Amino acid sequence: MVPVCLMLSSLLQNIRRRVSGFTDQAPVSEEERSRFFHYILFLILGIPCMLGFGALNLIQGERVVSLLASVCAIALVTGVFYLRHSGNSGLVYRVNALLYLCLIGYMIVIGGEHGSKSLWAYTLPPITCFLLGYREGALWASLVPAIAVLTYLLPEHFFSGVHQYPPDFQVRFLVTYSVCLVISVWLEYSRSFHYRKSQDRSHRLQLEHQNLNREIQKRTLLEQELRESARTDHLTGLLNRGAFFDLAEQERKRHKRYANPLSMAIIDVDHFKRINDIYGHPTGDAVLCAIVECCRGCIREADIFGRIGGEEFGIVMSQTVSADAKDIADRLRRGVEALSIRHGQYEISCSISIGIYTSGNTGEDLDTIYKRADSALYRAKGGGRNQVCIQTV
Image (cartoon, rainbow, N blue to C red; front, side):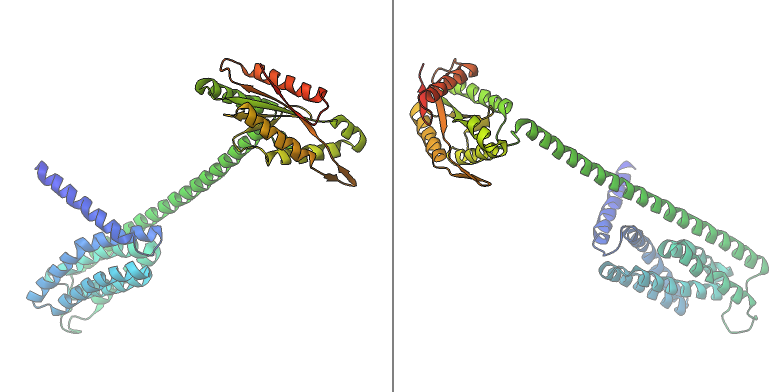
């Protein structure tokens, strides 16, 4: 018993997966795709039943019923492939509803044995309400009582083949069919109502999710900006003093671990106070920015460059021996010396002094390295400025 259940479950899952893959290609909305999916499941069950019903009636001599059943089956299959490529569900479902209504109407008229064929009418309300919605489905399904009443009112010998239903059957059929119709309309209305509510809720949640993502992105960007702002000198865009020494300490630890040479250069703008006093602070700011741009073009990308004071800058050069550090510093000095800085009506020339210390001792801390580079800077300034001095141990 258990293996049979497992086989049946596996078969049903395989059918569902294949039908889902088929309906996912249809150019219809999400709700219509769900309707299309269940429509195909109905056909999987209904078409064999309809073809069998048509074959049985053909054997019994009911050729019209057999023909209508066969036409309905063909229309249903054709509608599946048409809907998958066109997405025109309204046309497909209405044609199918019309053909099925004709089949039900004819079976009501002929009745069959004891009027049993008319009982197929109970399948119409749930099918039309599901395919066409509770409003239009109710209109289509409401035609069945009209056909039944018309059939009941026909004279006994109006034309051959009309089944004569007893009065109690007529009343029971109309009452039970009406109840079936009301239940089908209510169920489809409830399904549609809750589906719309679910879609609205899903849409609201999606909008909230999008707004939340935007807010997260905004906050992330703001945090990045604040982090950068906390590490950046607002005038020059360089690392500020704290960020410069943080990165310098990381580089010193690598210097200690791998025993690579580490050089630090301290740069000071010569007579910068005089520039501020004569031309004003805005001009002094312009001079600092011009010097920074010049220095950026002369140092390597891997070098750590920051503003550590008013007119004082620092450069940490990893894996750089003293001679190479001096070459870089001389290039900086010559570049600044050649600058002609125009700000407003003023054209200003300036120079820089640079002190360098290269650490070959992995046991030296950052404060020692900085102090020795600063000592070299003071010697450069004391020796006449616009020069590079190297501090040795």
